[in-house]
Each structure stands twice: as structure tokens, then as C-alpha cells.
Length: 136
Image (cartoon, rainbow, N blue to C red):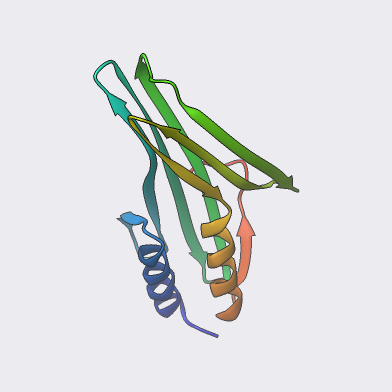
């Protein structure tokens, strides 16, 4: 079983390999985010930001995980093609959301980060707990 410091280091390395940026770091855990979709032009813009947080509990060796997608836009957007597949198992969403436009685009894969971290946490001998009702 890995200790808290070693597990946090392994999770941060994995997060950075997935392209997320650690934005807040403390002794119990961290928060990370990634801007996945950006459509920007003269008359408006649309952004989608994936945010996640992990907090470790030494008492019961549990890793608490939270995630969310924050979308915002302003102005008039260009014509955009959107392809979305979604499924929910219990309280955990999975699927993809992809947008394409002449002014940009991108893709969010719900569950990719969560499933990768869940495996790392289990391999380290810790329990994984998904907190569905809390934002990071």
C-alpha cells in the first residue's frame, strides 16, 4: 500500500500526462482543470472547462473524487456541429461531447480521467469514492 505522499505524486503525474493542469495543491489532495472546447471568433466565444479534485483521507485510506464540466458562452456563435454520447451508471456520467466549427472546437471525454485515476488508486491499495453532489 502506498502512503499518501507517494499516491499524490503518482496521481499528479498521471493528471499531467492526461493534459490537465494542477491549479490548487495541498497536503490532502489537489484540484486540476483543462480547457477542452474553445470556439472563438469576432462576435462571440464558447468555452468548456473540465475540472476535477481528489482529496485523500488517511483514516480509512479513501480517495474522494469530484468532477464537473463548466460551460460558458457570450455573443453570437458560428454554426457548430455537436456530437454527444452520454450514459450514466449510478451517479457516474460517461460518454463524450464534441463540437466542431470553423472558429475552433474540441472534445470532452467524461470518465477518462476518473477511470484512469480509479485504477491507480486501487493499485495503490486505497479505496475510490465518487462524490456526485459536490463540485470541485
